[in-house]
Length: 272
Image (cartoon, rainbow, N blue to C red; front, side, top):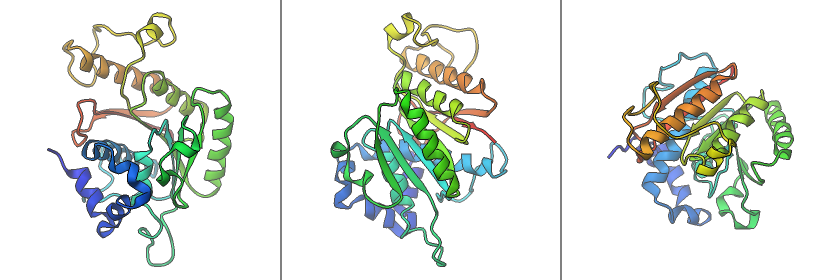
């Protein structure tokens, strides 16, 4: 079993990030399937790191760092439909100011925003713990969220942070909604999606989405042999990639074998 992301997390800051995750405020995390969940969220965060590298002028297709380390700096990460917020939890634990001071009193200057429909009093404690993260209880499909998020993004830009939108296993139309956020808020410089469930059948039939299951005559990431759910999953991933490509952004799609799941496709869009 691939262990790169797990080893990165456990060894980060001499184990301080892992120690934080074991704290009482993170008890909800301990009830998850940690090996799988950590590998998936770390895969998304790794793609964010690559995103930042390329936004700073690094070469496309070149790993941000050759060594097995992980670090984000000056990033405003928007965790859309965060659910129980493991991606935010890991980001916060890995970039706790106490763990990332450079010795001169300078922190990594990251901020993590989780957005989901759950009421604030029902979310895990870690989403409210620490100065580098916040939870926003909102309906992602609501039109009013666009204006609110645009204002938040503007505030974070003023603090010297690069806004990047992430979606870990956004189901169906929520992945399309994430792309729409990215298209309509130009100040968001990057998007990282690791899609999950396809749009529901009635949504496809009624034209709510332009995606439709079925055999196609073009090649896309993953097996091109029609093989049930995985075939349609990779076709769905290709559809989202093409949807992003309609904007003037650089788009890349790949599979991450370090994620402990068959649904390990990642789509990354960058606006320079």
